[in-house]
Length: 219
Image (tube, rainbow, N blue to C red; front, top):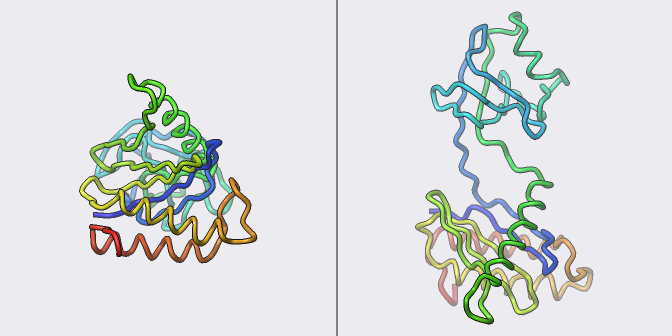
């Protein structure tokens, strides 16, 4: 069981804090001979598999490294276009690592804004007046838990579906925000949180939750 990540979204829908606590990496590395028997394409400035699944490599997986060196989007470490590099038979055999592409900072900002809108839609769809927005979304891999304060700040935790004590953890994160962000004289409301004590105490709370798997009051 694990806490995957934490997001803090302001009342306007802007992402003001994000921390990846544990990101499971489903990766596959294989040595290929020429010609490459996978079809690759450029998608969102990344090289991804568009056809051909084998040995743990799936359609949609991004190319992460070539010969043990991480790539930079659609370019190799020395600035060559990956697609062109892999068309050259002299570069083979070649070891390629594939996996799920990491979210960029811009993608995280966009997703936070989208959830803010979905939260509002969830409240408006309610048959009863005064309903809260979305408090939990569940998939087969993780659960998204959301706690919104009276001032409109949203604290979001992504966790293993079996993880318990998330409601208490969300309120603990709110306490940490109140104590180490709001009380920091250098912090401005609604702005990105860049407070070392906030970081330290948040990581400590997540470690306790991970180890105990039951983050109860008084922990």
